[in-house]
Length: 106
Length: 122
Image (cartoon, rainbow over all chains, first blue to last red; front, side, top):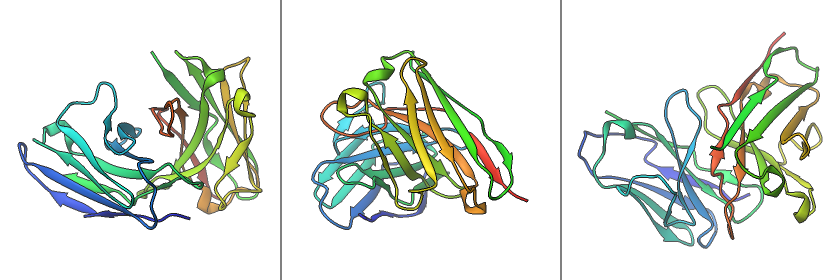
């Protein structure tokens, strides 16, 4: 199975901060890679697919980069509604696997 | 508007069976590959398995941790996805989400249900 390692596991930030979350795959997944946001008590929501493509309706302050084994999610200016847990996922190989999550806290 | 509504969760005893349902609306269900993802209390996301669309063969794929006890199926006439869990174990306690994969040319989970809580306890 492909292991997905996110860092950090949690971070503290303020409204307006630029936030970067990284994810590393244990082997190359090319661009078969997605990012999700999960607010407390809610379902996950797709933010970025194919490593860099912004899902429809997602604010442009979210962006994704990377390919192969190393990926990054950037929030250019953190808003209050962005305080949540973020998960990466590789979608190139079965079983589909998620990272352990990064909790973004105030 | 895409909607996915899970049902069938609850408190169940170890060793018993359970069927979760996911009722879909707002999109062409028969064309979508459908997934189940679970989340144990306070833990991260774990992919359970999926079923392909009928045009792609309609076959399921499972995570190794659940294969043999979990069965994923779909009824396109009812726009409903199912997850049958046999021989329930304490470790199956989780919120179970259904999710669509309608991403063209790639795999991603573009819509999710609100989840169904399954608690396994004696």
